[in-house]
Length: 112
Image 1: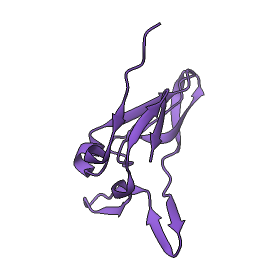
Image 2 (image 1 turned 120 degrees about the vertical axis):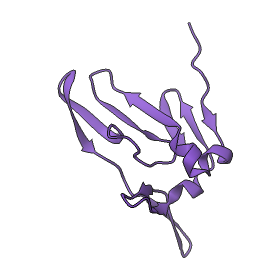
Image 3 (image 1 turned 180 degrees about the vertical axis):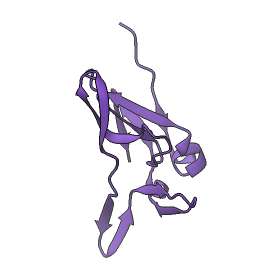
Image 4 (image 1 turned 90 degrees about the vertical axis):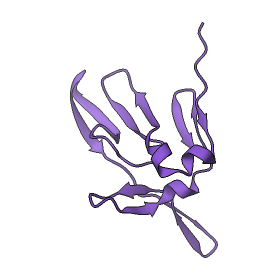
């Protein structure tokens, strides 16, 4: 049995938008559906999204969930975890700055 490659990035990758956007992840369901994105959380390609379903497997893929703008609250402070790059190039919010690490748990992407 072959061993899966270990994929793990720390703040040196996750804390740099340009570097984190250049790293991508992909999860498939074996039926034609998938999720994909960048380590930074930005959608930099037209096939980035959290849920693409194959409505007539394995074809006719349709984007059902493009993303989630999540935030965390601790005491009286709110921290955005999402990152969006707008058409103008403006970045807001800047959730990538909150990412300590990115790694794969099996084939599942995990951010901390």
